[in-house]
Length: 223
Ligand code: SAM
Image (cartoon, rainbow, N blue to C red; front, side, top):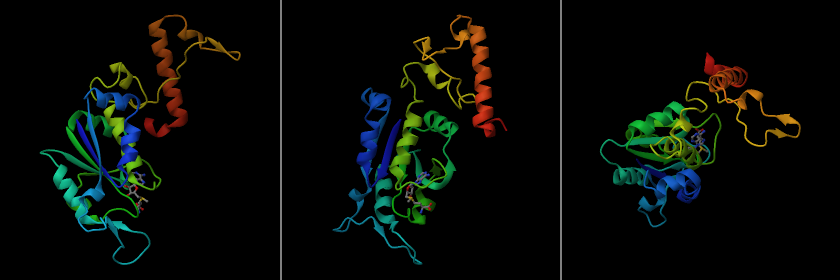
């Protein structure tokens, strides 16, 4: 899979995605990630990427021309263009799974200031994506979240393929509690059932824990 991130702060994406599992996935060529500065496609001598909004109001709006040029230059046959926006559809594990399995080339457009000229969205964007009901200063932070969630689902990225199966949301529930050594810490012991080696009983206990935790923390997932 190839991912192109278009933003005014590409260095944020490059730095965040160079570490740990996603960084190693790039080194192993399991994914190709390129972060670009939209300013590189601005043609005027000040390399302008924003202007005041028609109709008045506060803030600045990102201009059409550099974004059109950038996407035209990067686009490939069958690629998808996603725009990060709080006004988009909520990004979920199922969204990440869909991109990881169906999309070979994803271009992620990141807004800044008040957002992006609507003509960009209407003419170039396939999907508007929100990472939650709050407003960030710019879309590259949201793009990093989306890229991380997608790339970890690509084949061979996680050391153990079952990691992405036995985790929150994968089966519609939150994950069960996890424990490691020592068996007792500050007077609190690991649940006895996890120490007995009875895998069927452990699986049943984990399923019950998942259900209980989901009921308490995210009853909407069970609705
Ligand atoms: N004026 C916009 C609005 O009210 O919807 C908010 C603009 S926000 C200050 C600047 C940029 O940050 C947006 O264009 C978008 O790319 C990104 N952004 C902010 N919050 C986001 C969220 N929850 N999900 C995805 N992107 C977000």
